[in-house]
Length: 160
Picture 1 (cartoon, rainbow, N blue to C red):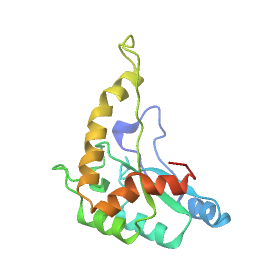
Picture 2 (cartoon, helix red, strand yellow):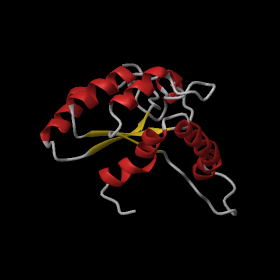
Picture 3 (cartoon, rainbow, N blue to C red):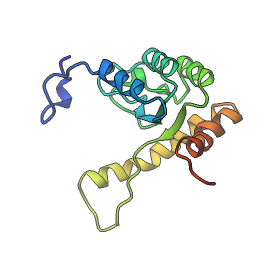
Picture 4 (cartoon, rainbow, N blue to C red):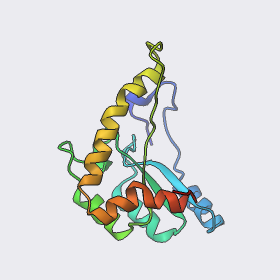
């Protein structure tokens, strides 16, 4: 697959298929919990809701961490440009309520930091938290609780 122009350089000009290798990893040890980070923000536009559905149905040890930052692949993002949950995502979450958590990079920098990647990412933190709140508020309460924190407690074996 040819990489989109905005992604290069320093990234490779093309990408090799790796789904079969990923599935071998998932099948290798069904007791290992594997969390796919940044689900819903695929920059290549290949990781679709259909692919997510197929993989979570086939691999009981696969979990997904949803990223609420708007990205360059809005076709795969759980939210519409109007901050509504897309019907296909809502159905996937309803069908597999124990397999998703909220994730996303959050950067906090000292006031003295005036530039650089960390500063750029820190400036996005507010919009990400706002989108997470909109997303969770649009779900039924029990599902929002699961995705918002209960699943993370169970998957990562955390204590409240």
